[in-house]
Length: 396
Picture 1 (cartoon, one colour):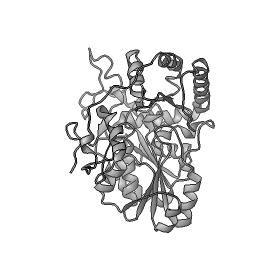
Picture 2 (spheres, helix red, strand yellow; picture 1 turned 180 degrees about the vertical axis):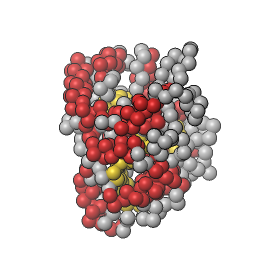
Picture 3 (tube, rainbow, N blue to C red; picture 1 turned 135 degrees about the vertical axis):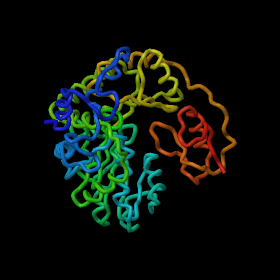
Picture 4 (cartoon, rainbow, N blue to C red; picture 1 turned 60 degrees about the horizontal axis):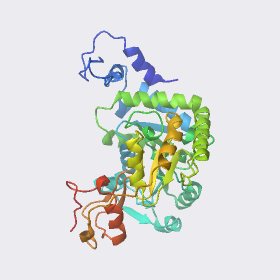
């Protein structure tokens, strides 16, 4: 059942579109398929609902998503998990907020944007002692490693705190028993960047919320999102959820077999352990960036790379290429290139959150001092830094 997708499917038959977007649902000669999905690219019309105040086909699609994930309610977004993060934090803006472990740069930006009372904590014991109203964690991380959410949830319940989980990279967990449990089981607010692991157009995201925070979350979304949501993205959220509800077990069984075959045939490729087996992280000490470049020369693009690792997101739609990618990886004996010296920033204070994207986790936060160890990491990734001005790290 796909109420939003079906509504757009029916609308393809109308005679004239005198509304934005101005392409009118047409394809164009010479566009090389760029406008193939144009018939689905509509705006908020009488039949297509209003994202900020969903009450029609969008709301019905959100309700089906909530059912699929076991959530009380689900909210859709079309500008990425960043808007879901902002909505979650704005929903609890009157509370003291703690975060445990690494958080995406969008979290730290929202903290400043909304002037939130945010504290970094080091362990679960601080949750009960700290008097926090909400606790934020990330699980899984960029490398497919998950956190013990049951323990975090227990600590939050004991302290009367809401649990917010950034599970942006785990939107697929709900669709196969082979995958880790979804954070929806434990969290009051769960963030999913659906386009990261599901066949959703870029920007498709969801926020799953418990009944107790639903009204606050809907009100917060109204303030956060733009007024021109992409219906291509919304329809793909609806369609992908239905597809994976029906075929998720079959799909991920096949993905797991493909990964095991590739590992068995190419044992020289070292794959790091992770709870999410679909996140294939290849270890290449001192040569991660070189390996990513080597793969690109042969037409294979990784999700991310750092000095020692290459990250591949394996899905039902690319698993067939994995063996070939592993075969190419075996032939790489290159090391990472040397980057310019930036040791002059050691000991100085950062003006902005600075880190490597992806994964988008600030390595040095605004107001922190650049250490020698962190500068070495930044130096090895100068072409992928965020938090710079015209490519330069700003200090004071």
